[in-house]
Image 1 (tube, rainbow, N blue to C red):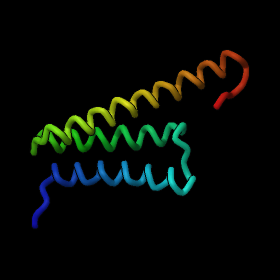
Image 2 (spheres, rainbow, N blue to C red):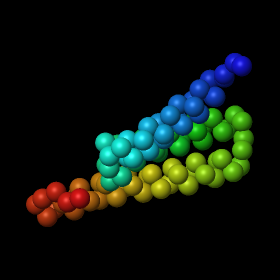
Image 3 (cartoon, rainbow, N blue to C red):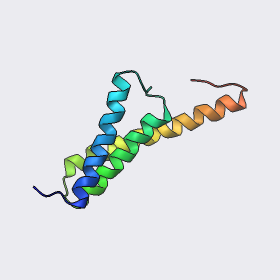
Image 4 (tube, rainbow, N blue to C red):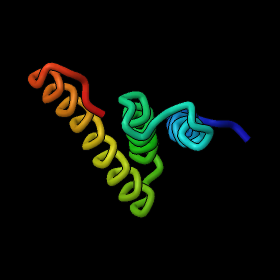
Length: 92
């Protein structure tokens, strides 16, 4: 079985999402960490890129929603940090 570049891109995206989930489960990462949302967003985006070459609507919808939720997490992370800076301390 020969893998194409788009297959490898999609597989790398899956690996990023799985790594984020494993790190969350073994408590090496917190769901509020920027790195958690970034790993998920980049992973979902890479899977979406691979789907552009081998279309699957259900997979696209799943990854698009995953990406939107991850982007929300990224925006929330920066909003919390901005509010904490304005209030003179860090908030979780």
